[in-house]
Image (tube, rainbow over all chains, first blue to last red; front, side, top):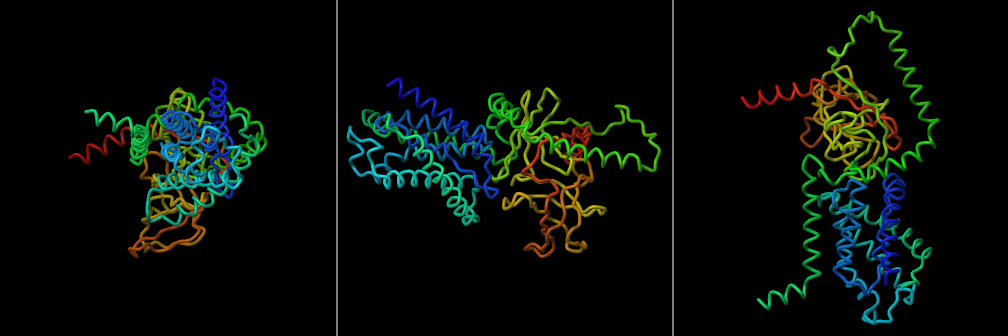
Length: 168
Length: 271
């Protein structure tokens, strides 16, 4: 149990630092900065207290916001996917994600991919809608969600295969 | 009563989510007004300190380029100095100065968002205050937005909230410099009347109406121009002299007359 808490704290700090010191400066093609800190929500244990999880995601968003001068946009997006995560999981894994024996590592690659892609899609949609904040620029929002979402997805998949989650 | 408590217990996650979202929205909407939230910026001691530490490591990698750039600037300034016609009998004591300059280094730069902010390693300790102009050797960069003791954040010209007075070089036709958030090396100059003769490649500099920047600081050159929807003003694309992706040394300009100008303007408006 305490080992789980320790791992999550380390993960939290490392993901924030990697995000703000490396990926926020990537500027691939001038505007693509993948958001890898979403991996915290992907990796977070499933059977933990939900209120705590939402609160932690709020903190994660605020930490990234403080560094990137983006007001509270990361916070809003991260809190949203934290709240929606159980619904996304039920959609992707079916009813059996509620069983005690359920493990993320036992699911198929396709399911993990869909889960991650949905998290990123919702997160980026909320994020860029708030950042750009105008319906007139809908095309710009769609373009940013798709291009930066694809970049985030590729990097998050790399992360998930590099650091597998067999521990939980 | 029982039912209300049951309702709260049942939907506690949803209520928590709504509460946190309201907090996040409050911070975001508040910042859509002129000034950034006082707490949500990277000039505080924690984020500034972390950026400062990593800046200390990164800075060794491009010392050569930066030295080259500073040498070039010195060369330009020296050639201006030596070729001056008037004898330098202007008294440069502190009572005659209109501007003072502080130097600083960029420790965090961004240009991929809609509202970009730059963090520098100078703050209140070095008498950097809100609304001072920031330039580089090539042209303007932005305006100081928030300060802490050791750091300051700058609202970059690549920020949709930015609005700076600018004019055509050697004329007095002025307009406002804004950014449409499309590309990081092009900004827009609006409100130039259509009777003004324009040419592609003309230089745009800062105007005299600003109490933040001195007049005639270079901004960029005209890339293309069009009439706007009202057909009476130009909308000009200006390609910047500054490479916004590669900025290290900056100069922060303090206009010593700014307070007096603002006070005068305020009393005039109130009459």
